[in-house]
Image (cartoon, rainbow, N blue to C red; front, side, top):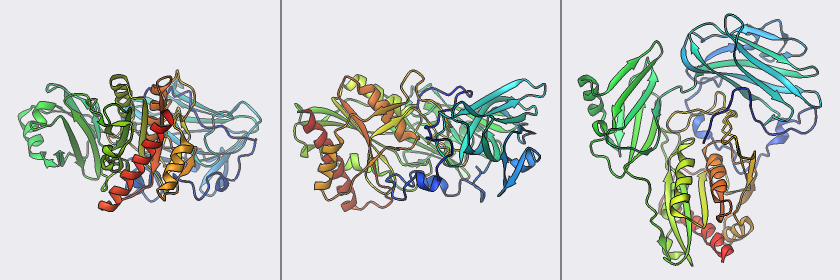
Length: 482
């Protein structure tokens, strides 16, 4: 949730050996975080798995003579794939994502190089996959990013000697496709501007502030010119002052937008979250975080937000907690957490998130923002997509948890739960926050992340259950510090 990636450097997790293992053996069926991004697979993509607004260049059409056909893709070996990609007439920040699978490769060095060229053969973007940079042995997405002026572009893929790579398609889409709310969640003065960006063919047809419909208000601002609309060949941007749109905003307000099937949401704060600890005023200070619902149009509560709001601080021994429900946004959630650590000086940070089928005690966080396991990637709640992007170029590639996982495991088992260990928290916002909280708490105390099982229905008993789970994890952490 910080920095952006130079398109020449893509980071994946190391593969062992020169022939990738069977992908079916790579991810166990009972992986505790299986289905982490399941809510993004409902209506966001076409029947072939492409983002609904992507322009797709199939490999066998883009470079039909470069390799042997194989199940709708082509296998590249000792030949260069070169072809004109469709969709480059769009302007602005674009991404072309290549769907690839590495079959064999040499013992070290490069596996393939992808280049994007302008009409004169000049380099617009390049990305190289090396043996030390692969994240997965099955299909993955390799992105190239550039700022388009609408001119034609050519894609060139060059396998290294000894490499065999399967190339399925290239899909091109705006880097901020769909509906984007900018700058994102945070503290806003009344005169600060909000910017809503959406495809030109769409219009914002529903806006809610804290659940109250303010669509009419936005339309009035557009008519009177207080909301400035800028239209390009492909995009529409609306700029509006916070005080004009959010007349009745609270210290923390939720803004939700819909444009047809597109959605975005963000938190608008008047001030940063206060350091309001609850519980034993002389106890160990613990920052506890959860998340808003996601995706932006999510129809159910986020179990992590449910858990931290349901826990009873009066039941803690020698501890006091500061509870914050954070936005599901790259950079913004991590920045909020780091700010809280700096201002509120906790001795421990426990972050919770919505995961897969089990309670997952996360052991390691990765210096990577990526949702390449879903074709085209998935947006955060404000509409931003990250593909193979480094979180912090000055930080290590991984950070191990600082939490006492053995003690937390025992405490949860005592409740009748069945926690699991996990070394793969995904590379979405949860991983991003975990990487941030460990980094922020180095030499300060302990920190880490726990995924709670994907849950959609929360009656009183269910809320109480997850409040007790959060409470037990916090108590075990505090006891380890005393």
